[in-house]
Image (cartoon, rainbow, N blue to C red; front, side, top):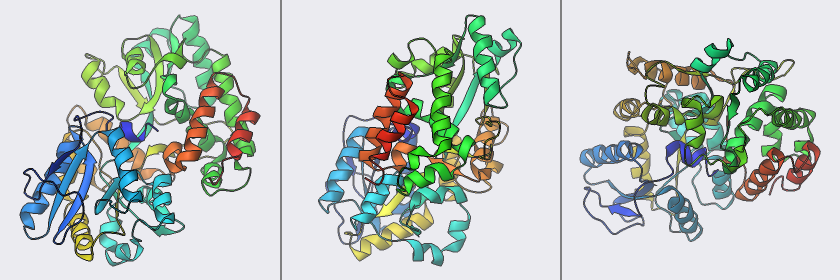
Length: 437
């Protein structure tokens, strides 16, 4: 996306690549060498620390089979990993977001098929949320290990503002439209939106497509079916979002507000907007930046409401089902073995899962909710856990699920749709032109 994917795990961090050798000291090797595997990841705390500690534990336990790491910022990582993979110089462990990017690696023969490895390690696979495997799977085969934490998109609301106008949280789409009238009449922006970022607008479409037509609607697009964007459910969803815009559902000037600045979150916690659809990662920043908004019990959250008459299960969700680790097909056999050992010993392990929980993340491990306890963040973590683990469908963010080419056309047309400069049918026609590309 720009995000959710980058945002969920951080869009900023260190100033550039930082390398560490097997023992944690300075290193210079970034390619796979005999007896050593390599791994690049994002340089943003607190997530960086969780990843670093996992490598440190592994290297301490396996001094003759170590992993050398390189950390870098989000945008630099995305650029460098693509270049390295294309040049056949990828790290042993390729960290990423699955979906369309992974599909492109598979089609180019750049990552190993891990299906049989999962068959041999069925107990390991069974510990993970089933919904995490969709973005790791290409043409029925698994090419990545789902890892780390889950981040669904969440419908947030300001309880204080709802009390002020005597309103209840929406149970279905019609309620949202009614709330728009109610909050506008009270001089309060109904919905906050950082529309300049484009991917924030996309979240609304992801949920509407699912609630109206079910996950099959986007699955047909992902599978490259001709004219899939013309599905009646898709046109209905595109029409509904423009109806919401015409009704002044979003804060005035939303198309000039950026999500990176967290200005959209500020509108919610300062009481200038009543509701916001956003990634679960915003809970932490609102807790940090919003004074007593979160700790004082004024933040409400829920899954996206149903659409009356829709086919989609209201328990479905969208966002980031996990992060993903693949193995470079160009790595040495020894390096590949080290990577697989690292997956089994550290990734999704009990120590690492507890580490994620300690920074209010929710690992993709069944039963981890027993670790949430009674902390202030416990109810939030339980909500995320229940949403992700119970979802019959957890749709990956569209701009990560699609190819980079199709994703850019998607984001461009989403901006135009929200600016009312293309109709639903024009939007569908434009996107149909890049299906399968």
